[in-house]
Each structure stands twice: as structure tokens, then as C-alpha cells.
Amino acid sequence: GAGVSQSPSNKVTEKGKDVELRCDPISGHTALYWYRQRLGQGLEFLIYFQGNSAPDKSGLPSDRFSAERTGESVSTLTIQRTQQEDSAVYLCASSLGAGGETQYFGPGTRLLVL
Amino acid sequence: DQQVKQNSPSLSVQEGRISILNCDYTNSMFDYFLWYKKYPAEGPTFLISISSIKDKNEDGRFTVFLNKSAKHLSLHIVPSQPGDSAVYFCAAKNYNQGGKLIFGQGTELSVKP
Image 1 (cartoon, rainbow over the protein chains, first blue to last red):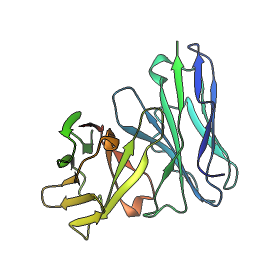
Image 2: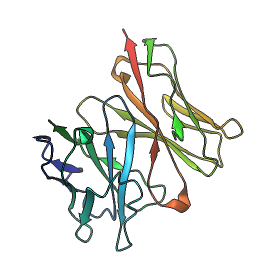
Image 3: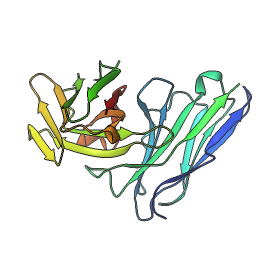
Image 4: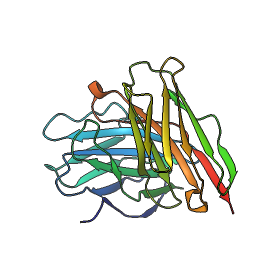
């Protein structure tokens, strides 16, 4: 694939429901990141995966948030029992490694919790 | 605790003139800084970066300046073009803490013809 892809592009859900967001990184990229951007704010780091190392989960805002990655491919971000404050654009990025390598971002998933 | 701050939410510049976007940081452990550009409904795209061992990095119309003592960096775009109109994010990282980036709030640049 040419770039990072994310699905769905938009998601509207009701408060209390679970949602699952998907990210397909660039092939060969060992590092994968999840960020979110609330309205009018900057990007907020959530979690990152680097190869087979334990993920850095330091940015996850609560235990309702979790993410998985299978090998060096697809990742899913799951939000359980969604709240209205979870409404944001969720962005995924990937890079060749975790050093100074450029992070390439997907278009994001716009999540609206009613 | 906002470790990376962009205090100007917006900037308007005339085409052909210089655009200067500013960014301040508080964490002295940051050693690598990046600027990303974001158009509406798209993900951010990498623009230019600078390591803390340098004070300037130039790429075409884009130059980033780093003042470590002031914990301040700036992005200069010259000459500015209407296609440069976008939201610009400053980001910082610490090499020893892996790849996670800490972003500022963004500055929306509008370049008027």
C-alpha cells in the first residue's frame, strides 16, 4: 500500500457502546503509533508498538482504552463503554523504526459519541 | 502539563512574505524536534526536523531554528505561498524514550494572495 490507511473514516456511536478502530501501517514499518486530536487541540499520544517489544501504553487515558497489534501489521484500538469526551479524531502513524525516523500518518477516524 | 506550546492559534500572512511560526517547550530532555503540516480531513505530513545538536536546518523554502537555552524553536517559510495555508504542528521527542512525539496545539496559517 502507498500509505497508512485507517477504517472507518467516520464513526458515530452512542454513549456506553464499544468501538474498534483499525490501522493498516505502511508495509515494512516496525513502529506503529496511535494519537488522538480533540477539537481545537494538538495531537495527544496514546500508545506505540515497536517490533516485538512491549508497547508503550503511557498515553492511554483510562483502562477503557486498549490496543493490539499483530506482528508488524494491522493494529486495532478499542474503546469500551464510550463517553462523550472520547469524541475526537484518532490518528495512526507508522515509521521504519522508533528513532528519528519520520512518522507517516493516516487520514484518521473521526469518532463522535452521542 | 503542556510540554510543547504553540501560543499563536492563527497567523495571517501575505503571499510572498515570510511566515514565522513559533514553538516553546519545557522539557529539557527533548533532543529532537519536528514540524508537521495538516490540511483539513487529512493526517499530518512531515515537513522538517532538527536535532538538538544543531541550531538551524534548511529545506527549500522552510527553515527551522532551535534556541536550546530559550527552549524555543521557530519555522520560517519564505516566500509564503497560498498552498502553505494549513495547520502547523510543532512536535518534540526524547530519543531514549522511543518514538512517541509530544505535539503542540497547532497554529493555523493563512497565506492570502
